[in-house]
Image (cartoon, rainbow, N blue to C red; front, side):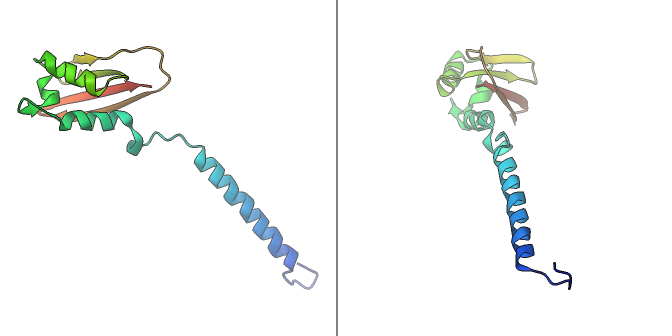
Amino acid sequence: MNSGGQFLLYDAILAFLILFVVLLGVVFVLEGEDDSSMESNPALERLLLLSSIDFHGENLLSALGDDSAARDVVRDVLSGESFVLRDLTSGNVLVNGKSGGYVNAFSARKIVGGHEYELTLYV
């Protein structure tokens, strides 16, 4: 502003420059955030896939307790991934895929037929 209190052109340009720097900083911070929200949880996606498979007239997760063929189906679906599938209700590890040397672990839980199942993927 000049001595008469008038808003000058360079004041408007300075205000837009400051606004641009602030918005650029916000965008930079938001893009740097880790993308591990619920929408992008690979363990949840795989667990939902496993729970949707029908195996001999029952849910695949429910069949894991007493059927080794069901374990083979889980290993086929999750082939190439390190994982552990647990039945938290009974405290048993149902299927243990290869594990070791991982940086991140994604975990998801789902209740099927009165049992709570947890799938942990190691990436």
